[in-house]
Length: 116
Image 1 (cartoon, rainbow, N blue to C red):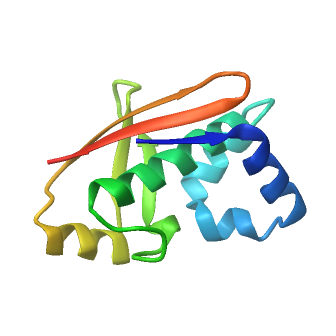
Image 2 (cartoon, rainbow, N blue to C red):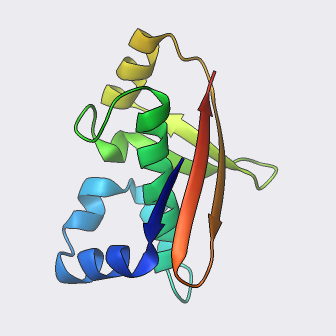
């Protein structure tokens, strides 16, 4: 599980625009930027990326954050797609699947991830 203040993500992405592409995949950026206020969605996805790392038993730096993609399943539920360094890490850990839930309020975004 991970929780983050939405204003921290907003400040970081506003001050350092290149950071967006270092953390988020192009699909995530497109999804979040279509919103009138993209920052709660960015924050929820950042929390999910950190929760994925925690579920794998590692921390920031174990793989590229942009290789952990928080997507939408056909049902509309959030999903996790791993590529490159993140996929290799999950395979090395024997993880076949992830389940994720996202939420955000006015001030906070949170995510819970289960590795299977």
